[in-house]
Amino acid sequence: MAKKRILTGIRPTGRLHIGHLVGQIALTKSLQDEFDVFEMIADTQALTDNFHDPKKVHDHVLEVAIDVLAGGIDPEKSTIFVQSHIPAIPEMTVYFSNLVTIARLMRNPTVKTEIAQKKEVFGEGGVTFGFLGYPVSQAADITAFDADLVPAGDDQAPIIEQAREIVRKFNSIYGPTLKEPEHRMSAIPRLPGLDGNQKMGKSLGNGIFLADSLEEMSKKVMQGKTDPEKIHKDSPGNPDICTVFLYHSHFSGEAAPTIATECRKGERGCVQCKRELITHMDSFLAPLREKRDYFAARPDFVMDVLKEGTQKANAVANEVLERVRTNMHLRYFH
Image (cartoon, rainbow, N blue to C red; front, side, top):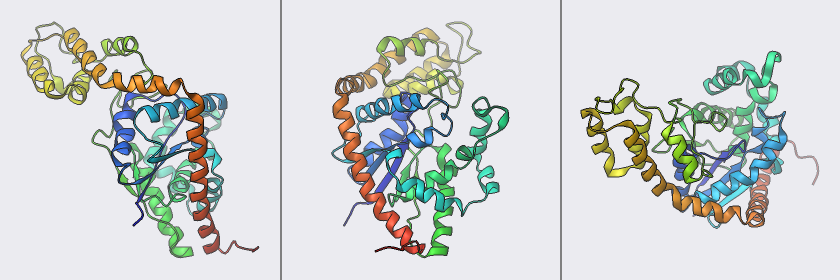
């Protein structure tokens, strides 16, 4: 039997951070032996709020591909491709756009949140058609590859649910054509920024990038947010509200419970806590840093991976598009 298929994607708007690694990349890596994985570099979607800076998107396609490879997405097992070079996706986006109302898009909580966050991008003129409609494009991304499963963070749940709605409506009108995807979240659905912000963002400067050196990572950890009530080294602290301890819980393994106990008893200071976190995180990140350096030194190889993956992805998406066109009675020539 053919493997079930996964579609997941990352926007090339900056280098990837550790939140991507422990979230989507780790989950996708764990599934690539079981599933037929399609990992998309979502440059078209990145342009919805970076239309004014296309060079930024262009330049980060290679960087994101390097990060993905370093994170363990194996091109022998997974297909890594560039979204803008799959013509089936924008064509299917147009067909799907007829099935979704503006009101429904405006109710999408992820879209509402992101519009509020990007007022400086759109200015006084308001949100663009392309940005408001990006959930429709994501539905095309998913269905163009007959994806059974979409690994993504919790913030993407409303987007995937809207894709499921689009599939159901399309199939009800045109007959059984498209697969309805399932959503799977990682064990760490969202890692907050070191500054305590619930969103770790490339543009917020509050994350540890996979390309960061030990020195860069150390500097960021030392600036991490701790319990604001713990004023003195021997004051009892509350690890439950400490961002630095949250990172300990993910990266310090068996040492984490002891760290929490000592913090509550006032037996450790925040500086000590941060230095120990640097040690544990470096143990986790050092092998990945080496892999990243390897791929960064071989850009031609990485571009070949993207080229071959995009060719394979096109073949798959074109098959689905032919099925869509046939069921929509858009076949005129033979």
